[in-house]
Length: 170
Ligand SMILES: [Zn+2]
Image (tube, rainbow, N blue to C red; front, side, top):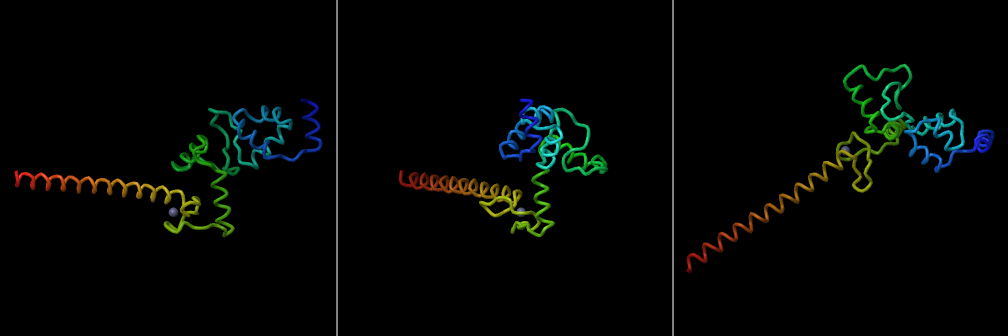
């Protein structure tokens, strides 16, 4: 294992998609564990994790800077800052994906959602942003329920009419 580690570092073998996958899956074990697992130096693992926007933070550790936070910028000034930091720590807010969207926007490569015209298209199936996609799915669901309810109401009216006619000729 030591030899492998040494040789890989000397030739600085390129990172493969498999290496990245292993890193992502074991990120919570930290840099030292990954260095051993991948046969690379801790520094190399840290640098690659940063490049890939993979957090090597052990679960439960909350201090220090988080991915997406520039050096010297506090992320606790406002309630919104604190909430964003919390969501990054809980991995609810995916900084890497958000940064890619920002990058596309800055470079003028973003495709805007035709419904809200302010968020980028992210759902290929509908050509909408994620928020509008969910809103429209919800609307479709509502409409189907309303159609079923309308049909039931119609059935009830028909039944009532049938009973009235039957009563009339009884
Ligand atoms: Zn939208």
